[in-house]
Length: 223
Image (cartoon, rainbow, N blue to C red; front, side):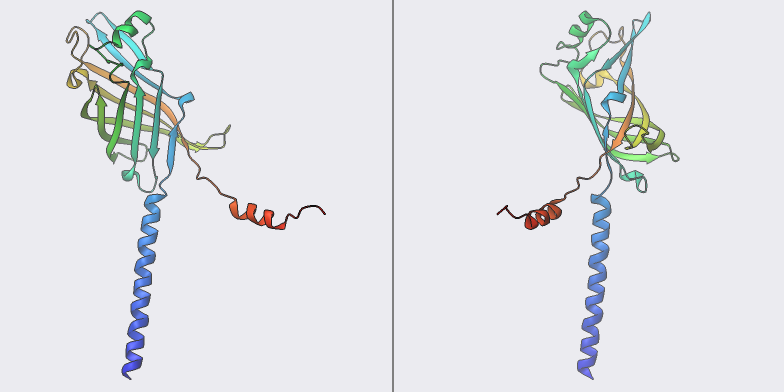
């Protein structure tokens, strides 16, 4: 009798352990397999505006940047965002102004060739809107910034057949917070920024090694 009870207890314990291991494995896979999205730089723009002494508004953009997003529609709060911008790619439509903006009193591109935004959290506001909080590092200074995001559309791109998300993100950066104080307040301190773009789903690499090995095994040199 005692042996039967012990055996039953062992089998029950084994089943419980197996169930726990399977649950842990499924949970870990759901995190590991969050969909990665790359910014389609051919359909993206990072633009900004600057108030010039109250007389006019100067429009500019950065031409070189990269962005990666991990996003799972079932768990949008777990979204992570990482954007990097090359500061010397600034373009305002006037070369002399751009050279000035690359100097030490503004972007100091020789010492700080990039700025970076890394998300720290996401709050959804319905299915297509949300706020992405994160840290912006500019001129070696890191400050919190919030992106207001609108998702326009998610569908398979009819040309590439790749799952694609179209979006717009907006924020306002106070440049003096990062040490860029030149000509404030005559030249605007609060800089509205708009990111328009498309994200393309990154398909996991598919390996065909087993098939290749099988093919190699069946190939025989000619007699």
